[in-house]
Image 1: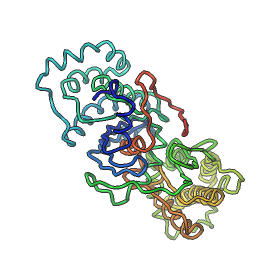
Image 2: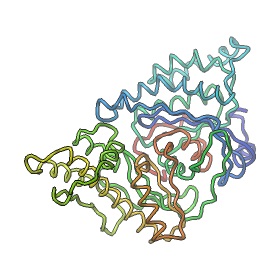
Image 3: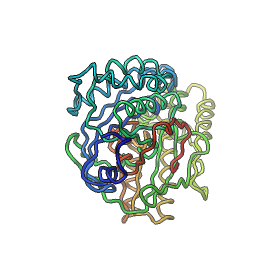
Image 4: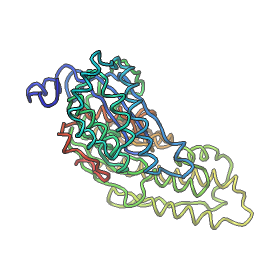
Length: 419
């Protein structure tokens, strides 16, 4: 059943009723990820089953540079996408080589020029695709979902072009997905998720306030219904995750900064932070809007380290500084989120993105929601889904995806939620 032969009525039957299988691809930064998910039931409260979910992290490779190097990330995505996809198909029972291999290749080679055009900027993919993808029978996949932004443009293009190539040879529709929607919907996956066991997406009580915090984004989003997103506040400079990375670099704690700072902060015990005069600002915590700013906080850490009294033991300072910095970031994030939830009278609060793995942030938000908003429900993502992953893209596609012609899909590095 090819995308170019589906009638609108038949597509709606597949989309809204009964069963749909999604292959999702995520390459927005430094994780290469592929997921296969089965969707059953109504679109906005479906039953979901994870057939397979694979994530290959590039953290170790980028750590020696203190951050992600876009061209290295691109190269790794090209190297990993085909083997990850084949592994996912095999685990899901969809990996079959055609009995009529020569015929399959002959039929596909009619589109050889188009395939070369799609993959011309991805030479590694172009070399692997004919050898490893073309000989396969078309798998039991109904749609291909792919992150097309925001993110690093070179990395995004790898996933987008791979999805378009698959769409060409498998004759399946493509759903371009906003990466931040993925982080939002990941919050609603049960903490007790077991792969291969179906779970039902919860019935959401609208409106929803979502705090999305990652290395590249810090924003508060008002979601009035599925497909209706409004950014009510965002960072004016550094994102929270970016600030964690930069401050960790100042203190020579390594990359990624979030886990490194959390580890140091946990060592803080009897250091008298007042005596050391380490007190950092809580930027924009009292501003009337919902915007954030962490660049000044980063600078305050730099000055605090510079102005330490001579002879100060750094083994005591680093845990104290890490704790105070982490406290400052969490104080601002929690205060703004709770205030926004109160102002908009929301019934649901969701948190997503890499920084949502931070234990203190999760603990403080849980405490404040219970204390100040007892009638609201807080959704926190499973820690394994706080980073970039294809499962969140599959879920977002199932709940709020729209297929587009492959020629109309491209990478959009600065894509905003709601676009």
